[in-house]
Length: 268
Image (cartoon, rainbow, N blue to C red; front, top):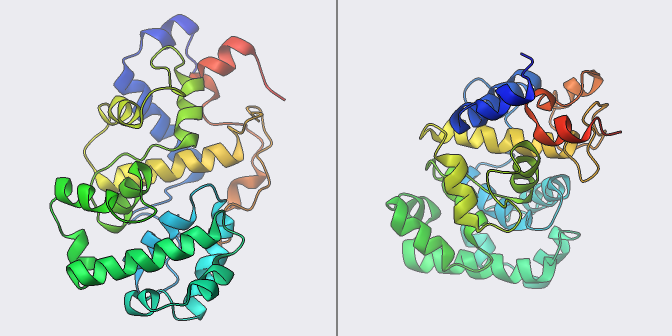
């Protein structure tokens, strides 16, 4: 559907946010939830919740494909296990998660995190069953966990409806709706509430939307945008079938509703 500039500006905010999600799913296919053939979050161990916690820590300032490799090494070493992780040697753990950014600090943080969870709750599942406000508070007290990481864990490992804000989210919405908010300077909570207010309270949808926005940011909405395509050839995830859309030449699926694209013309 083509929208004139005036029609685009007249659309309600909730329409825009939900239209973003619809167009992304049409382009990439579902990336999370029961309709997904190859889920966005790779589960390679028998401890999916712990794997997600570890992944949420490791991905801080690190490309996801680097994290996938590190998780595979941890799985092979038997360290996606709360007891084993709590007893791990920090030097060996650091070696296994290298070259993730701040790998030494993250190794120490993951060991400390595992020990605290064991001492306070016995296991991770017990922690993740806490009521949402209490869980959020508890997570923020754990090593290497800030607001974004806490929300990732609550959403993916705990199944709580939390909209995750990351640098990709800010970049995309700053281009889509630059007048709505000072996206790059606004607080985490401001951005989160602005977007979440337009969405259903549905953890599966919120998890899929986060995955869709990440996919868009590494394929089209880069620092130097590829609005008209082709998409970046970066191998964001090595799961079979995840890169099948790379042969498409129809450009970014959000071009028609993107203010940046409409105002500044087509990017190379």
